[in-house]
Image 1: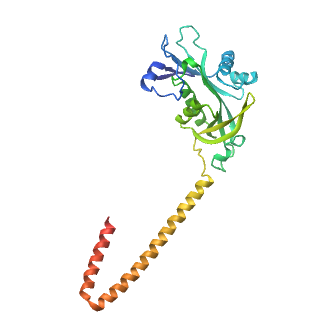
Image 2: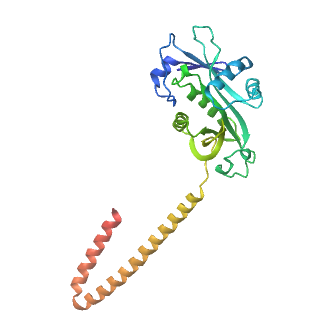
Length: 284
């Protein structure tokens, strides 16, 4: 399906669609009538991508980003990014971006999910990879490009020893994005009220996390209470069973003593029957 060529990762869309037709989590449909078979290359974003990157962001997102953000992306100043290009385009624009993902590394203490990470005294400098933006131009959606870009991010995060998770925010009305990240096995861990402010209106945000390198969400207070409740419930059942057994043993011993006076032979038969039943129960 794909081959690596230096720092590039090349995928033939024809073979990808043949083997994994549902690989992408995108939901928006488009006209698949390509005049060619797209061959997608994944590479770092570079300075020559500046104008196209700005244009795609403007067409995809309701939030307007400052010029400084794009300059930081293309020059790699504190931002790690990957871009996708179709090197088989018949119009000659074989290196033009058709998709991208931008990320940055932050310390766990700077994030909103510090309390969702397990405490590790030996790992004080825990880091996270935060996905800033992810997008694919309309014509190339539903080809698994967004999935491949996110997988590159996860692979990168996994290669950082101190990294414990990849996380991001999704605006609450972006149902396709929510479905996409759930399909990528990100966990929806939190809803943030009025996180976005766009054109004079507040919007909530969902926070998604993908744990790496042993990072995981610690037990919540509710989870701890559930475990404690289950433990005491089991303990009470065990004590009740022991008390019930002791009562039955006392009753049986009284019954045997009464029978022993009246009919010793019946007692012996009863004892044999009881022993046989006990042996059957123990072997099951």
